[in-house]
Length: 339
Ligand SMILES: [Zn+2]
Image (cartoon, protein in one colour):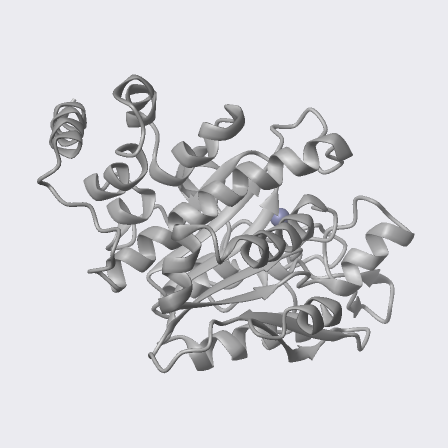
């Protein structure tokens, strides 16, 4: 992170976030284009679960891609004018190191409980949103132990305090996990949908428009059955993702960072579950790292692009209904949207 900051000092700064249970320092990277404009924030964290190694790999890939392409890629160039990107590459540092050195399938952090007879809280059950109510365990030897109380863990507190302080400026909260190939929206703790559910899931017509209208009608049709980010992702290697509310398409859980971020007022909040669907599970083979990162990049930038256009309309690349291509495109979408 220090290296990245040094070699990209015009864009990147490294900041202190907090300390882990084992007293390691947590830093995040901020990617900001210098500007007088008031900007909003996109937050992304990786590696909240130790064994999900593809997740920290993606955060690194994301930073690399942004820095490599922000001058040439019109989409990135556009959203960096309005949005700062805050990236926490490894949230659960202690657990991540433990998964490298001691137990490849370790999930939780490394906080001791019961006089050091069992270790680890599931940090993604430890946030202050319906804490301890569903999909958790109070047994500290469980994989889904929710801790002794909401935000009982220093890693959770560090992230939660920071995000709370900036919550009015954060438009989008992204948290990267594996595996299963899902893009999960709130909530995990209830099947009741959030008020902006349609837009979150991406069935809103403008979402499809933004993604599909650059492509030919021939490739358009399969996209229409997909949701925006998943459609963008599938376009690269044909990997299919399910999109929907956590409690409806995966399982119920409480105290997740995604639910919490949405309940404190961050409008767009997503959990990504990257490859695969269980063949290799957490131990994704190295030859899938790059493809996974490439396709995920498309989904994440599609979401950021949408958020950017929604909150900062009127940019140079806004779609105009006057073009023949778009009216064709629109009519196809309208027809398909009602079916
Ligand atoms: Zn996870």
